[in-house]
Every structure is written in structure tokens, then in C-alpha cells.
Image (cartoon, rainbow, N blue to C red; front, side, top):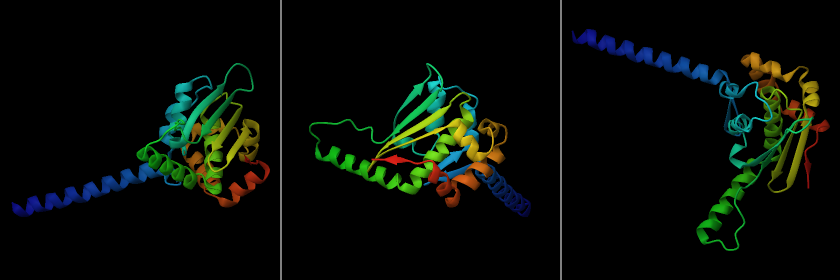
Length: 208
């Protein structure tokens, strides 16, 4: 009887390892990361086929994209075409006339995190990935602009037409095929230094 219980326990343990391994494989199959921040396509698809005027869904998309912890605000151009989304990145800390030692230390820590995160290389990856994702998920957005207030003040603006010429297809098609999104956008473009550099040679990030 003891042998039967022992054998059953071993089989349960093996089955658990198999299920966990399979689960991890599934989770990783539609996830990538930029600077340690996960990009989960399945989660992003909860906001597919939305429109520029839906601030809640646009916010939800950005919440699930790299750079969100430095997002200061969103501006939506919905009155007339071209419809646009403008995202501001930087520190949300309000200016104060006087800061105590604890507040000064926290502000310095945030500034350090900001500048360590927004390196030239990472900024390019975040901007291209986030613009691509917005064009994939937001059906009627025509232009996306990012403003960054870090060591330098930088801005990047791109139209749907320009980005679709780069990828060679209607970006909205990726909502129908997660595997293709992962392969062509995340693996072959965002994680390719050659593709990133080639793209930004003709689509400049303007810094002051």
C-alpha cells in the first residue's frame, strides 16, 4: 500500500512539472520584453479595434506597454482628421518650493531611474514598439507622437502611412494573428539592432 501511495505521489509530481512547463511555454509564446518590461500581446488584445476617442482603452494600451511608469499624460486629437495620440513621458513630480530630505532623496532616485531607462537605444525601441502597437490596436489613429523629458527634451512623431510602408502591410491585420505580430514586430524588428538603426536613419527623434 505504501508503495502505491509513493508511486502516486511521484506521478502527481511529474504531472505538476509538465503542466507548469507547458503553462510557462504558453505564457512566453506571446510575450517579449524591452529593458525587462514585458510586452504581452494577449493582454494588449483586450483593447483591440478601439478608437482614438476612447481614452480608457488608449490608456489601457499604454499601461501595458514599456515606459508606462514614466508616463505623464496623454493628449487625444479627435475633433478632426488626422486623428492623433500624443504621449508625454518624464517625471510626474510636481514642483515644490521646499523639499524635505526624504522628498529630495526620492526625487533624485526617480531622476536616476528615468535617465537609466531612457538611454538612446531603449528610447528607440520603446518609441517604435509603442507607436506600432497603437497603430495595430487603435483603428482610426493617423499619427502618434511621443514627448520625452529626461536628460534632454526629445520628441518623435510618425504617421500610420509611414509606419505601414516600413512594415509593408496594414498594421491592423496583426490583431488577427498573434504569432505573426510576435515574429514580424517583436522578434524581427524591435529586437533587431539593424532594423532599429535603419528605421531611425530616416525617422529622426528630435532632441534639444
